[in-house]
Length: 381
Image (tube, rainbow, N blue to C red):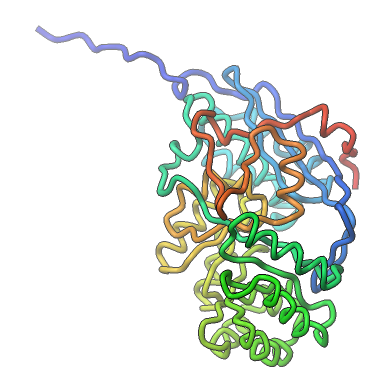
């Protein structure tokens, strides 16, 4: 006698999970003082958020980008999301890439895709009632961070106070400062930074692609005298051959880092194939969201290369807990400040690390709409 087939209980993934709402917003928040790095200066930062509703839950994602990224979400990506089951994140990721083909995927479009992808992962974890780190597969319970700021607009006293606080008050093992606006002053600024933090913490520098190859080699030798352990984007990250040549000429113990302007897994792969980095940086708000960040980790695993999460510490936290090759997250002054101002559940820095709240499903963040509204801006370019 044949046994009748059993009908399993329907899981959230098997039920209809089409999005009922896809809502992007943009908010421009003034900095707490003028900021600059080796190539640009700014007085505000724009946060682009997107909320996706399905299955009675709301997923939140965001990027730091121009407000026009919100328009891309509204006009191009929202219909793509609504056309598919919200659990099918890989399918939606590919469909979003195709949707922006004729406007260009890098830059604004990549940031828009990244925000939507992060929202979908948050939504999926909430629908399954698990923390995102658990859904992705945890490798660690907390993630070390490095304090990052030291803008070239800071006078020496401000620079020293900020870096010293991260080391002495917050327990950071590494701190990073900006260089490159005035190469003739950089060695003196780096020396002042070392004097402030002492020998207990490692010192990183970030040129944001400002130097020529000759200047980068010359300054690397001077920075080595202060024990600089990390030289980020000494040249433009577009110059992969130049970075590879410079990497081979850096003083012993100084790692070359780049990757924050990778918009896709292909960009990240090309940095690795060119042997252009000792540490690969990936930014989930630019490289395709949580999906893209985990692809970056898989590439690093294949290439036996450390991975560092660039900026947006609150958004990276759960994925960083799941990434095999992750070394640390950048506790970027601008973004850590904004996330603490505008997101419920933003992580707090303790003993040089941040940890996810595993009692909250998803990535644990919720936009404080009332607090954010004063900074709201339109979508138009």
